Amino acid sequence: MTSLVPPQVLLRARAIECQSYVVAAAQTGRHHEGRVSFGHALVADPWGTVVAQCHEGPGLCFADIDLEFLERVRRDIPVQGHRRRDLYGCPGAPAS
Image (cartoon, rainbow, N blue to C red; front, side):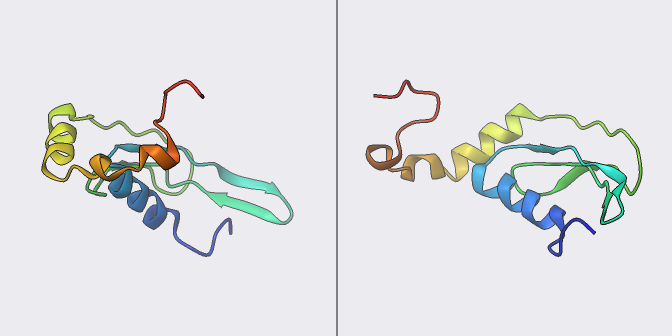
């Protein structure tokens, strides 16, 4: 087993806190005697809803990325406005 915490819970939490779609690829199969991975790739929307997923084993999934929904979530709950840019900087900005 690769984790004691279900990865889906953590990925959905990242989608919610970052107000982003999270696209998570996942390995599957036996890597060596001590390690097995189970897959479960998924796509979660900004509310943490799983909008596409693969189940155990090899697979492929597709999801529509709704940019209007993304903008609405960010507009209705503007968490990025709370970011302390004076402490943490701004992602994508050149380092000073």
